[in-house]
Length: 116
Image (cartoon, rainbow, N blue to C red; front, side):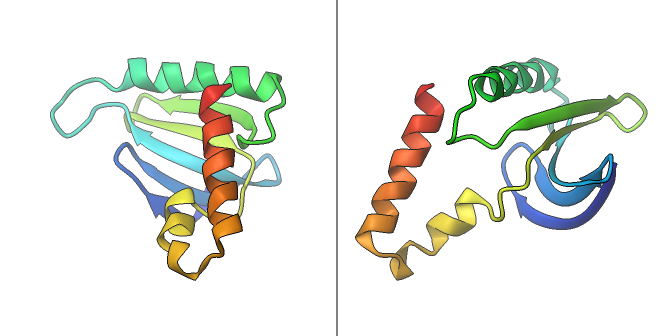
């Protein structure tokens, strides 16, 4: 696994463009312990389980889960998925420049992804 460039940062971690087993992927890096010293492992495991379930169902609204690693030395989890092109947050920030049809499509895709 090779991390190359940062795509975006969020509340729980960072997403990088990278390479995994020769494939270009997105790699979400999440600390196992948050800034308050609380263990994120239950949240990480839940995200992995949901992601695997949605991938098995073949949802067109969710990027496919590929694999994950948890490095005990660095206390970091890496969730590996297909590379979607850009972050949802960046796409939303560009809403001003979007047509109303594009805005409706983003809302629809997001709701479909979370309702499955």
